[in-house]
Length: 303
Ligand code: DON
Image (cartoon, rainbow, N blue to C red; front, side, top):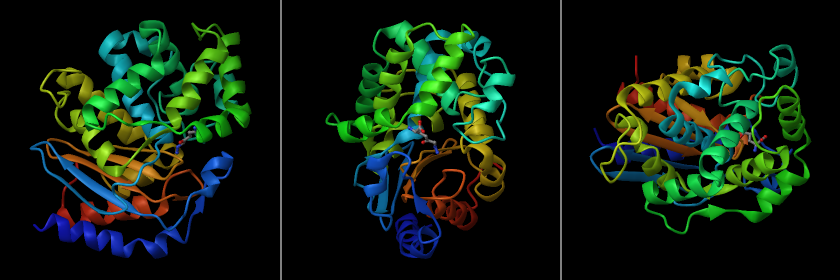
């Protein structure tokens, strides 16, 4: 199969789908991104890296970062995490407040915002520097030592982060935060503001396709832990659209409101797609479409 030709076709076909979505504007700095951007990259476990369109242009990874945070916490802390966060699909928006109250401050899963705040809180306790730990990991796995946060996006989100602050304060009131709310939010806003390209992400996520092995061959996660993260990505990675994503794409995926989606092809590689215009659930419209077309044309899915 000519994978390069396939990625080029997907990049060419994206425009009408991007036109159906809307760039996130609740974080004002994200509203300035050109909705016509489209990139797609495929990193393979045997070391190939292919891409098309804007695949080398850095974008705000936002919630895609949560897949990596989960890996770093599970690697250090194992199953203890599950006392503080669930692993069921939420069926509610990623920043919902209501569910958290009736579930007594235990977030439904680690990928909704409340759950990600728990990941960061724990990584902060375990390492003293949640953002630094994540950034070092992403730099090592992607091979991009210059990878960093976009300070303007971080400040923009911090200035408009009332919902995340509300979620964090509520969890603190339930006794489910170990660190001060301000520290957890500080690290959360900055980690969401990390900028990476499709190429960077397609390389950084390879441990998920490779049974937990890092780029240097060392083990981050056991086979079983890597399987579990993929399972949570499939069931919860695209929020209240996870069922539709599984139906259409058939791969574990993690989206972000910057328009990126990382999808795992177990034992083959990682696909990363970026198109900033989002649907009502916060997932990239052209990104989901491209992944749908990729798995349909290659037949590569987990099903
Ligand atoms: O906290 C927020 O709202 C954003 N920093 C991240 C949300 C996000 O990316 C949800 N994904 N689709």
